[in-house]
Length: 346
Image (cartoon, rainbow, N blue to C red; front, side, top):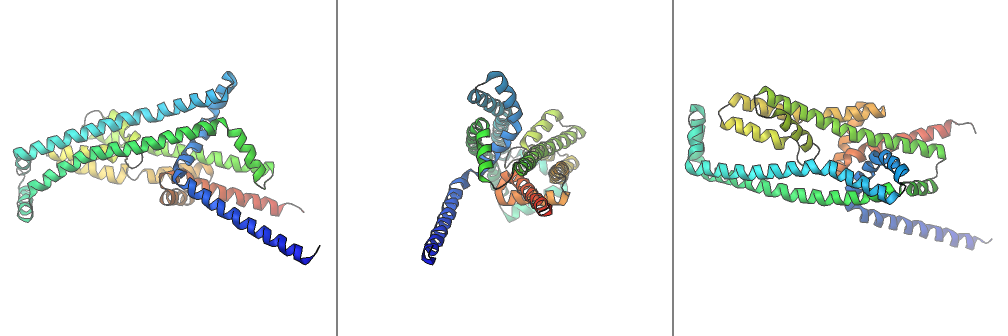
């Protein structure tokens, strides 16, 4: 064959490589808005696959079984969250009306003026700006918080519906996708098994780690409600645990209003204890529990698991809770594959 033929072939291969890279980039741009949806649908697929397989053995129809699993996941995950969000939105609107009434009647200022140090601070504040106008503004912020909460919940609901939609196909077509990946990746069956085993363990660790952190936050928050003599500590502890799982919310949705209520009642010490406990204990405990659970399950150093988790959060948002550990697990698995290949006898 002539050198000219080789030149044309090399140019064709290079053009094909550039075109392939371009379409892969365009596909990534298309999928970028749905990274969170894809991540959580695959994570839920791994978590619910044992149930899917058990039901498929009984019912036979994979589409029907996948639909049943999706309905079950939606009911279990969405029901309590919707009830809590609706309740908190209603409470924030009611609190806004209460603050506005207290400001207009003068009872709020009269209550705080009973304490000399607070009265002096209020006098200085009044001389600096219109305190009543600021209190009215706070009341307006509380009312808008309820509206923002509902708007944010609507966006979360849309994302959740898309996740369930993707989960249906992930469950039903799991074997098809698995075979396709085996055909595309240049790995042996043993190496593919290692890769999928690491990925499954990572997803389990990330999900269970998040639930363990939420349980700890709810338990510690409920314990402080009980110690401070606040009503329904079990109920509010459960609410804090559930809100710890909701994006952009967290247990502060519950303990901050409780601290403000104690402050208004004149229980300054209890209010400070609640605020300090909420910020330093309830708010930070998940930063330790989640990496420990992930690192312990995957047999990784806690510091590596910490960087993978919070690096994933910074890079990918909430879906980084799963994507960060997955990236680290993939890296470790590929390193193990290279070690096995290079150490194997020629």
